[in-house]
Each structure stands twice: as structure tokens, then as C-alpha cells.
Image (tube, rainbow, N blue to C red; front, top):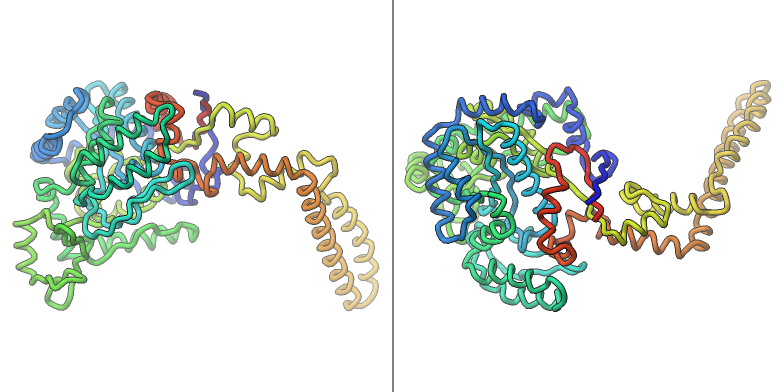
Length: 533
């Protein structure tokens, strides 16, 4: 597989904050711990080892063994779970929602980045051991974000009404989704493999958590991936002291609010990803996940009649920690409390909210992980590569906005020069003489000259645009071929990885797909990957 890279900032699809972070802009250095360079992991290992309690390892391994009890586990994954009991073992983590059949393609890129990072660290730090972790977002409650995936430009939708944590949802009703999926796949090539994978995952398990665990394990278990479900009573017991500080003292609200203000002072172009609440926990039961809010002398679960006094809330938290669910602000802390983690691998939006959290981690004495942007990639087939070459383009040109790309191509291939810059320059030279003349008379004439220059320049602009439109009509076939190719590679005018499901690529690559990605993607690569195969 041939790999070409372009800077993230040149793609037009990544925020200013993330581009500045990748450039290690000095003004951002206080918002993270260490930049994820190979030479920085020694310091991160020492820091995490100094404040990760040994007792947490025992709880973690016990919970993982319980979670894996009913699933076929590869030798590599089992060895990694066992290794977590040892103080020399650390993790690198990515997290993702329980998207139906993995959702968008970048689900694979996240996990591949994590696996490859663990492999590189194992080679470079032989005295330690590193385990790749996929953290399932089982407690999310926004079903509309995860209940579909795209296939051949169509949305395969699980039309289900439900509430509460998505991981606890029954897979009932996914039989209908399978029928739609199977019909769209047809019966050629590798379709049977995909159908069987979907059936075993979703029709062979009772909850969305179980189905997603099976699916991720089937795809990546041989690579030693360990899958964590945070919706676990024993793991949440480790979070109780931090949950109390959040609910009673509002520590994250104050610290993160200060950080958001500080980020805004660095640049007005930074978009704030998440805002903290005074209480960053939900109350969780089957079919229910609602925010906890302070109300006078009580704590209320919104949209319910459930309320607690301070003493009752503390009793509930101690007795039933599994009923308290961290939100997007508190979840990263939960993850870092229970795992001996060194690095979080995520997308641009995720890293943007992690950059809001460091001062809160410092406040509660938990090591802030290194933050690594996951690999991003555009997969281009041999046939598509040939089209790009025949059109006299570079793949990087296809990242342009479509109207700009068309204009560029028409200007390049037109036998008429559509650039009126020489005419504008000549016009400016002619008006210089008029300005000299105007200087010899009154100011009203000077104003008239300026107005005439603006008018004539606008006229040239209008003629240039009209000529360009005329050439587009004349060269319509070129325009159609170009837009068709860009629409193939950038469906819905978005990045391929954010739209396509892995199944479309699997139909071409089969079981070679994941090995190809593992071979091609380097987690330390800080540019966008173009993969030609």
C-alpha cells in the first residue's frame, strides 16, 4: 500500500485548536502534560507509576475477567489482561460510542492507532508492557447518534425508541436491520462474511454492550485488544471519592471554567467543545439516565421525582456506585483513575475537550495522560488513482471545496486565459495617470476617479466570472468527471472516514483490510494519510 501524507491544516477539515496543538504552539503548553513524542513516554511512565494505586490493578483485572467471562478470548488478549496485574504494565486507550456495526470508518482508525502505539512502545521499552484498550461508551444515552451506519450512500437505520444508557438496550428489533443490510449487500464476493459477523454480534447477543464487545473482539482480538465497559459496580467504586468532590464541591466546574476562559484568551478561533456543569454526574438505572442537579437543600434527578438530601446522596453513592454515571467531563477522569494509562488516542473533537481538563486533573492529583490525535486516512483504489492522474491532479487537490476545485481545473485546462490579472494591472497603471491629474485639481474630481476605478475593476471581475461560467459549460464533461470522483472520495462533501462504514472497504479487501491498516498507519505520524491500494 502506497502512503502519501499532507498536513492536517491543509485538508480544511481540522480545527485551528488541533492544528496549533500538533504544531506544539507554545501558548498551549500549559493545557497538556507531555506531547506524544517517543522520547516523552519515559517521563509519563514514571509519573503514572508514582500515583496509580496497586489496589486498582486488582479491581481492574477482576472486573475485566468478569466482563470477558462469556466471550472467546484470544491468547494475546488474555495475556494482556493477566499482565495488568503487574506494576510494569501500562495502557494506551481509545474510546468510542457503541455505533451500530462500528458506525463510521474512523472507528477502525482509532483502534488501529491504539494497537500500533502499544506495539511500538513494547519494542522501544522492553522493560515495560503496554496494553491497547478500547473503552466502550456504554453509558451514553443519545441513541440517535449511534443507531445507524451508511452503506452505498444509504442509511441503514435501527428505528428504535428507548431511553437510558445505550449499552443496556436490548438488541431486539435488529433482525429487521439485518434484513435491510443483507439485501443491500447482495450475494456476491465477501458479503457472506459481513452478514455472518453482523448476525453473530447483534442477533447472538442480548444487549448492545455485549454485541459491540463481540464485534470489536472479532475484528481486533488477535491483536491483543482489551475492551473495557465502565458500567461496572466494582470499577465505579474506585470513582466514589472523586464523584463526591464533584457533586458536593463542584471542583471540576470551577477549574474547567477557568481553563475555558484561558483557552479563549489564547485564540478567539478556538471553539469550546464541552462546558462543565456544577454537577457532572447522571443518575443511572435501567431505562433512566438523567442529570443530578442541586436544588436548595436537596439533590434532584431531573425529569423524575427522585431526590436526595446530602446524607441520602452520600449513602446512595457508597451503597450503589453503579447508579452514578459520569458525563463527558467526568468520564476522562474515571478512565484515568481505573487504568494505568499513559496516553489517550482520539479525534480532533475529543482532544479539544481533553485540553480543557488538565487543571482539574492537577487539582485532584490524577496524572493527566498524553493526548494523541488518531490516524486519519483517505483510502483510494487503484482505479480512482488512475482517474486522478489522468485529470492531471494531485490527490491533495481533492480536499479543496468543490467550487474551488472546479474553478482550478477549468483554469488549468482551458485554452483561454481566464485570469484577468494582467488587464487589472494595466487598468491600475492607466488610473495612476488620472490620479496625477486629479492631484492638480479639486478633491471632487479625485473622488470621481476612485469611484470609476472601483467600477471598472468590478466590471473586469464580473467578466472573468462570466467567462469562467462559459468555459464550465463548454468543458462540462471534465466538470462532471471531476465532481463524480470527488463525491466518491468525499461523500456528502465530508471526509470519507466520517461517512463510510468499514463494510464497503471490506467488500474490496476482505480479511486483508485490518492488516493493511496496521501496516500503513503510524500513530506518531502527525499528518493526514492518503492510502493508495
